[in-house]
Image 1 (cartoon, rainbow, N blue to C red):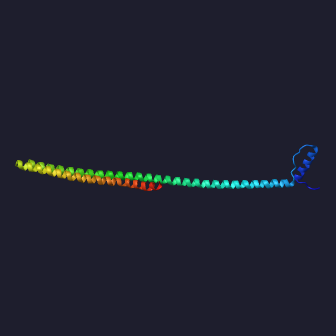
Image 2 (cartoon, rainbow, N blue to C red):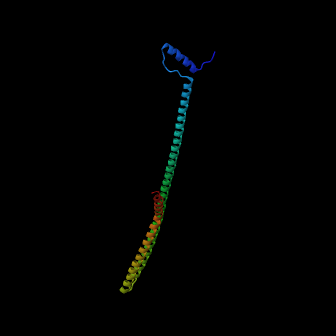
Length: 187
């Protein structure tokens, strides 16, 4: 007794059903089964190719997204560092300004004290004058000296104020220059 394959059994069943008039379906033979399997293998090959292409595309997209995220993180870090530098520049500028104002205040106080002492001394001289001419000369000398010292002190305070302003703005100006240099390149 010979062992029949599944296809041979199906063919025998198909022949029996066609003899009975039922089942006019074509009967697969061994050659049609092999050609169907070959078609399936071709379909599997195409499916594998598609899967491979999709995976490669996904990896490319993932690499681009990672690159974009890295750039975004780097840019964010640069902006945070730049903002921190701006804050530090403002703090330093404020410290320079406050120290400078204290120094200017001390200069004004010292000048006022010196002028007060000179005025008291001049009034003593005027009060101790023996003649009206001596009193008038003492008063004229006091007025001339006061005007000269006021002009000199005013000029010195103006120069000190300008210098203080330049020093206080130097950290901020440096940050502005850096911003123009850094972000001017990006444009």
